[in-house]
Image (cartoon, rainbow, N blue to C red):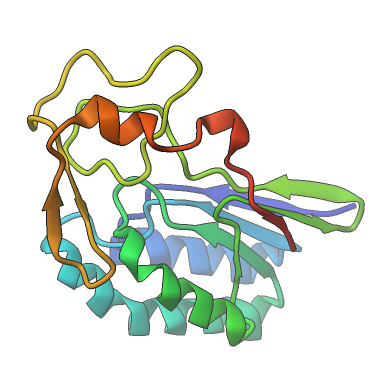
Length: 177
């Protein structure tokens, strides 16, 4: 039987991460699923980049002290242009990047979905249409923003058009690990 610890929304809170690592070391699950929002919420997106060495250390502890497979992905509060840093962690055997992927192990199937219906908040990269629903009727931040691959802010001129240019939630799975 496969054992699993699942969490989300750690937002780089050291106490939350430490509780997770301690629980994993104590419980020794086969799989740890971190379903997004793992990077700092405050301090800007540059602070998220600066968290990666610490994240590497935390994932190394999980691997070395508990031998658990870590499945994770960036989500709506995490800067999408940092995805290559997650891929580096994966390349070093510290995690499996589940963004839009399917992973099969021990007779189980894990599906990573970090695309969401539009919400009223400003960062829109992970937002996609969901059936007939395109844009949330309430918007606290105008049309919203995204970022280019260098982390430069890109204002969205027309949110509905931006979202309609994307594949919907039902069609975003990209690969199998």
